[in-house]
Length: 353
Image (cartoon, rainbow, N blue to C red):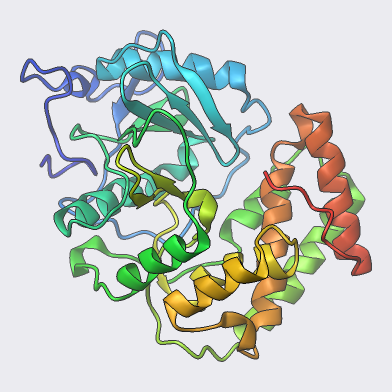
């Protein structure tokens, strides 16, 4: 492994060469596509949990069109073919499936480079442990292209089949029993790091909505700081739900989206499944019961559950608000969600995204 990059060097084109070496030392600019990001050696990713950078990076142009352009540049740098790629998701990241069995993940700005470094390093660690998680391609990565961070992953299957709540619980039982290597340097969870950025850098939000969300966040920070957790802290996924468990070609559930890994309260990984049932009705009572039984702990019975519920619902609103400026349907959904937070109204009409 190159001691100056996050990713492990490898044979990306079958010819024994590393295509990323051809762009080493070049940032985006006249005549330069990008460079593998610089990190801190084998597994050494000493960063906070989630990016919380300073500065006014432009994020409002994060669209299917602009990310497709970045995809072409990144694939050219890495020696892959972008022709025939299809967009899978556009949210915190843009995710494209290539005609080859490869998924390309593009983060909104270069400010998320530390998160991508951690994500690749976590994937390498989980692979050594034979844990069922998505695998990062064996090339030097991530790349910084067009002011965005790009990573390359093995495609799990030709179609997305999501896991069940019970399968999520089983993967979490296994994950929460693991001890990450010290050089991986996972840092304590910072729940509101990305939310602050989403609020301040979102040109779609009105001044009234922005002020409300700021005040809401500060109140939730205070409530979160007073929590007394029941489970011992340890390694967590950070965004565990059925949306981040995909079946591979053999039908086995696999954990994806590894950029939120941190050290923190295990309850954090349990609460999304709880609110998908309790707040939104996206899971049935039987599905939630199976989740709690497989994991061995019912987070809804813990006294701190209402606080984590409110925090996660708030974070879901700030996450979706990033897409509101480019999609009228999403904009209407975000307005509805903000109004529900303001009034304390029901959330059963929130739609999944």
